[in-house]
Image 1 (cartoon, rainbow, N blue to C red):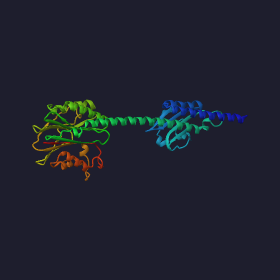
Image 2: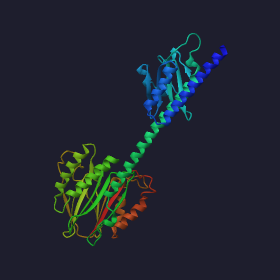
Image 3: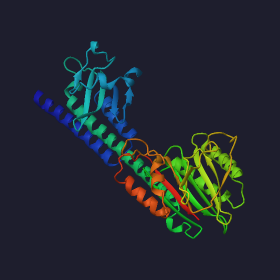
Image 4: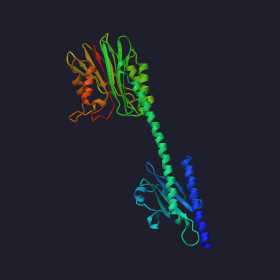
Length: 407
């Protein structure tokens, strides 16, 4: 009779375990959220196995408390790396171990790496002898592993979706930014002015922008800009900046007025978190004058081919967005008496290191444009020599160049 009763009890326990595992597996396959899976898990341990306290510490980017049912709050922030990683097996806790209220620690592994630790406390005793919970610790570890791995997979799936959404945002921002950069086939190329450009973003989304705008039959605008920082927010700021510039820049507007208007727009849109260095020039081929303002940008190089003279067009005011009001924005005007070349660039070029380990600054630009060949050929030769973008190990930033032959 006793044997039959024991057999019946064992069958009930086996059925309970199978039913529990089936319920949890079905719930996982039904894509139930983490909260519902944890509720089912807690119900099995509390109501069916008589466990009073349960705490789960789970690894993700850092260790976090996934559930705390009844334990002191200080256990939620325990230093897992130093206090728990040595526990590779189910461990019975003694008072001197310092885990208040914890009776058993159950480690959970995934690919031989600790994924979680389950704290169990207030185990219900049934008369004399061993608690029924202690008889089924392997089952507890098994069902804990199934739940924790399922929750980790949910997290990884959400992270994958988030990364995919971010990737699409970056691709969109990259396409949007490339639309800001004019294609060389659309640049002016005539006996008065021939313009060419080169653009290589270091990451999917960069912070550089250059442009060439026909303002009238005799006037052409040239500009280059670099926003502080990278990423989608930088690309959006530069997109807004490009639209504002194209709306404001005309053949007649004073460049000082333009600079102040653009500064106000950057202050409004960037909220003081970013700034833009900016060079703007306007060439009048009939009068053969080049007027410009350099707002803290790298000094463009102007080369006079007949006299072999090099001029750096240095800054005359602070960058856009650095101050609420730009105190001084001095316009400079230069007479172009002979065939000349102008090269504008961002610091991704000037801060490259040469064979001597020093930043190249403008020396490679000067070396390559110091002749009467078209500036387009000069740039192609310089880019090849510098190994941009494929072979230069020092390339760490966007490289943008806009250059023009002025005749």
